[in-house]
Length: 320
Ligand SMILES: Nc1nc2c(ncn2[C@@H]2O[C@H](COP(=O)(O)OP(=O)(O)OP(=O)(O)O)[C@@H](O)[C@H]2O)c(=O)[nH]1
Ligand SMILES: [Mg+2]
Image 1 (tube, rainbow, N blue to C red):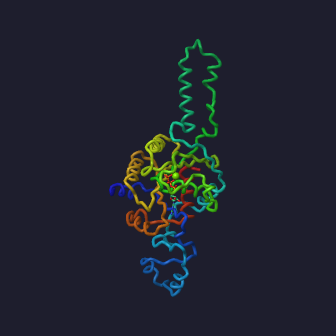
Image 2: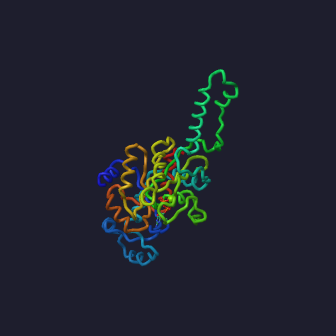
Image 3: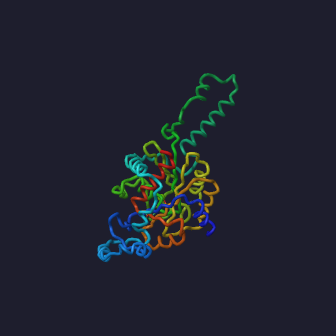
């Protein structure tokens, strides 16, 4: 376990994101928060009598996290330019997500299936002896028939995949990325969310504005099923269009053995991935997580900023 963590810290972890979902535990810009000891020392001058006042003001249903604070937000992620962020927000907000496919078998992905059927057809006609070949068979061979599949589905678009343990928050994240916050009611969800582990049973692919695709996946581990895992692994191993894997780690559960195994596999395959820490609205687990990751996971970002970062990252990864 330690070996894997070390590798994540030093080599692979391209970027850490965390999503504060549902509960707003992060002080909003302009809001007050309780400074940490290090900050107090750093800014002795500013330790003005205003602070107790500020403390008294901070009456929120959920107290601000000790680790996620304004300072961390400020020196948090700056990997993208303001223009990139703005563009990402625009693309996601204006984009119309469409469910393109929902499957439990890699070979049934429309373009994969099409390629297979086309190969089979070619084989069939190439085996015909010249005497039996006629114009019709030639036409069949060269035809761009889609075998009944909507041509749009065959259009190659860059894809990103969301994976993680069951209940890690994959479908929640996808909803959060694709829908406005106000629309996050159950009836408006694109990817169904449930407290029951193992809820998503298929890989579900959403196409956004015909530009790129985001794929939700069934979780592995507790209540996950082998056959579902096979499709996800097939997809990771074979899918040329895959540009980035977003690997979700539920901070309330910590990094599990299964997580380490998948991370190892991603490393072996050389598939680019980013880790997203979910459920960071519990300050206690965040504290533990920060201790575990120490250097590599110092920065936590708020709900909106987190979503903004991931959106920008998706555009970056897909080259949109
Ligand atoms: N507090 C909190 N709860 C969350 C967060 N993200 C997801 N949840 C909850 O966690 C549970 C599981 O969320 P899902 O999005 O269905 O998780 P999943 O990874 O898609 O799960 P499977 O489809 O079963 O693999 C739901 O009850 C969500 O409301 C978060 O950031 N904070
Ligand atoms: Mg799900």
